[in-house]
Amino acid sequence: MGGHQWLFTDQICPESLPAICLRHDVDGILWQPKNIFSEGEMEHFKMEHTATFSALGYVLASKQDKKFTSCSPDFQFSVVSDCARHLYLYCQPESINSALELRNRKTGQSVAHIAKQYVVSLEHCDRILGLRVSPQCVFVLSKDTLYGVKVKS
Image (tube, rainbow, N blue to C red):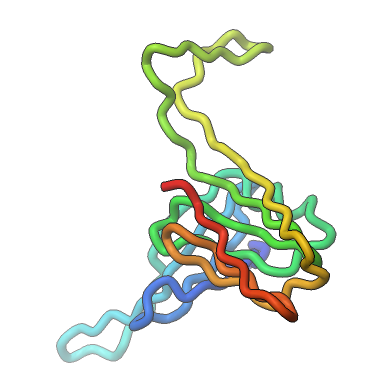
């Protein structure tokens, strides 16, 4: 794990240790620490690869005003908040409808998957104090308001 930039930690499952997301090249790789018990042996510790967030390391490097970063418990999207009023949602790549044809402009190569990104502006929010993510919703706490942003499943 040495030599990889820390991106965020998140409690994915209540009965396990918090997962750690590290930058590997441009991606964010989510690792879940686990204790393995074997008969007659001492405790062993291992890190299990849980999810990959494409280009998340690259995205976070460009965010100068980021405050919180998290992901959904089902790993379908990651979210980054800035200090004041914006959320940036990055969804996992999805297959394109087979009736549609999408090609890369430069290479002409056919594209089979596309990842969507969304920007949410929170009105009347001067400072974001907290962020929590569920599979379908992002909850954002400000001084006076608790926002719930529904994410399309």
